[in-house]
Length: 398
Ligand SMILES: C[S@@+](CC[C@H](N)C(=O)[O-])C[C@H]1O[C@@H](n2cnc3c(N)ncnc32)[C@H](O)[C@@H]1O
Image (cartoon, rainbow, N blue to C red; front, side, top):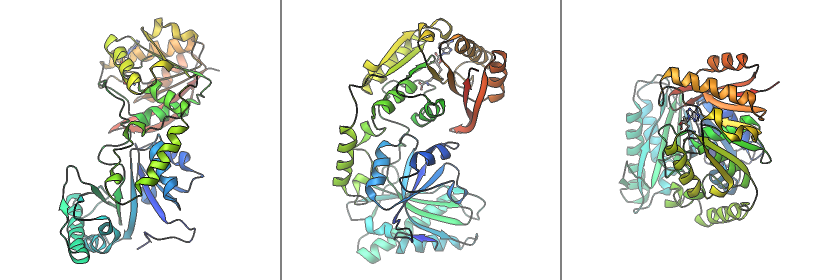
């Protein structure tokens, strides 16, 4: 056993594994630095960041306010094992003896989820079923009751991940639905961007709250909405504050959560002036973006315009352009997508804006078009949007 649910030599008693989109590990890690010990790619696990701190409050503040994560698990045990089938018995015993059982009472249901990376002579379903059996036997023997299993909507979601020769046991704090869903999306654009990726694009653009941000292909408005939320301090969990899974069990104190939420909510600068511009050539998308902004409570801070990118009046006002053009995979055909990219780049070159950040699966194509317009490609950060390889790209003017 290399770590457990107890204080280590640095006084860090609490260990958490944040999950994010692959490629955003360093951005998430940077946002956590200074608040605790941070390790991106722990155990070479892509899409994960280990966060160690000594106070539950620090973690709860991140759970509510950090814009770059999807899920987060309280880590209870990390165990090294030899890669053979008998490791399943070890997982059973770790679950049976470990602190997961402490969170169970007869009214609390549980389920187990397992992600497996590497080559193993067993499946992730087998890992989950051995761990589940260990939890049930642990509760029967140590607490005298048989806990209820609920796989579709458990109160306590046990995480049993296996990465090469390391077994991680924890409990999920957010729930089955990741925090990239903020809760404001009443209109779902068919190529809607995750809130986490939108924030990563905003971060690499270097835009500040004094700048005018423009998304000329705004779809359902994710980027301008997330930008305004960042500027005025609306936490990503604002509309989901009562949904966090840990509230159904005793993993953390509800009163501490309510204190954190009250403090963060109190500091939201609802009256602050922020300039965000959102345009799209689709009536349906633009109307949807307005509905989303209204649900996100920031419709008064975003100006909307129905316009093709090349004709928008916003080009004269924007300081920074942040956008998610159609890729050709989900929206248009590849030829149309390339034309949209060309028009976007030409419009940016002729606009007032100094920087453009965009997400695209073909960075070489973006560079070729940027070169043609005398623009610099300053950053190309490989990432994933689900299973699609993309790049988060920063383009600037000389
Ligand atoms: C990938 S979607 C944007 C999705 C958005 N980020 C969201 O989260 O909902 C691309 C959008 O670009 C718009 N679009 C494509 N070509 C355009 C153009 N030439 N001018 C303006 N909008 C355009 C489409 O109507 C579509 O809504």
